[in-house]
Image (cartoon, rainbow, N blue to C red; front, top):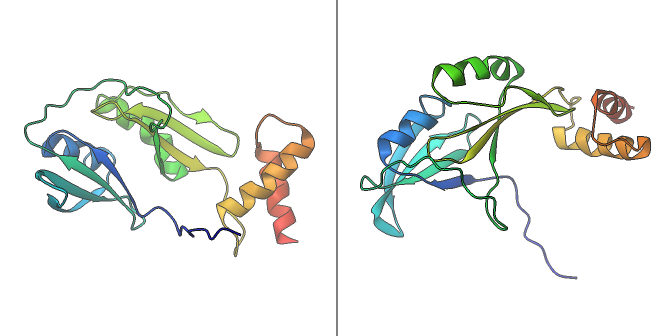
Length: 178
């Protein structure tokens, strides 16, 4: 058997940015991710490396260069490319996100019901699609969201349903608690 590498979670995501001001304005002042430090990109000393706290101790980092001008273009969906980056927010936060995004000049999809979660999508200043996602349930003590979703998926498949719905989540939580 081949040995596997055991991931323990996402350490950080690094994005290509433009200038420092554009990155700080968006990541800290719009999404509320505290700017924690900067240093040179150690692989390219002409590029700066900004670090932002996602709120749970993980980080998003952004490479910046003051010679780059922000150019908001829709990023192409190509094989191997990033489609979007999703950030976990509370139900309270997602409920006010549409208003806050609109007030700050970010057009968005409005809240979309995804069955087991709510989502809102918009593009950051350089065109990357961002999702704010909020689970509509809390897992039972001792279980994770992934545990509930895995069980809910089994239940959904047995129902021959298109996607996980509230009834699948409720049944999964009940099954896990028993």
